[in-house]
Length: 141
Image (cartoon, rainbow, N blue to C red):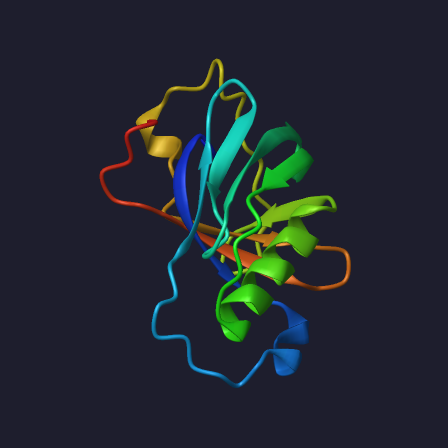
């Protein structure tokens, strides 16, 4: 089982990427999500800060209501953030980057360091995907 609690860098790998604006974003910030063991999630969509709740059942990750600031950014950054929020609104299946099923442990009980994956993907029902990469110096482990 995987320990999901911690901070992850997030990349949008959705099938809708062909619709992404073609404007380079020189000031893009990295999207990041931090999962607390108490079911809270917070981070950045790349432009705006976000916060909400998360729950895990087997290999399915769901997010409760998410709140976000409403700052405008460059078109490409806003598109990526919009896709991120769209995908977080529905149930997501945990997979390894190779497509294998992942089951995460109970964050309140599972503290075994060998269960910390470096990367995983969250897959939506429409085929949209988010790639999560654990950040170095993760202070929530």
